[in-house]
Image: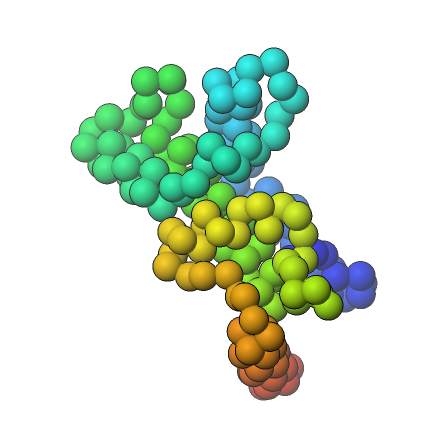
Length: 161
């Protein structure tokens, strides 16, 4: 998802008041975890998400949930298992939103919208038992499904106004 350019649509996505202001301590802890993870997996490099080293979000998230539920609140690196659950949940959400956007927006060449999505699509798709679209028929089915989703969203929006 990219942010819309329409002023009212942008105001309908309250990033600060609807997310950052709700969870400032949690966001700070997840950001601290990102730095610790980067220093561990990419020593000496600027902070970035090395997705090649982050491919099992749901399994890792559940392992951290089990550890926390078992009475072990902190991982061996001194970071709470809850922070790691939140990081993995956000990683999974990000990847699923990217995939939905890439599947809904084919280019003329049938490629995905961004290189970032293309690089991670196959690994993520295999985790959730999907295969990348490979034919014009696949893209036609995706376009039809996207049109139905958009029509449903318009109807729901009209009903709520």
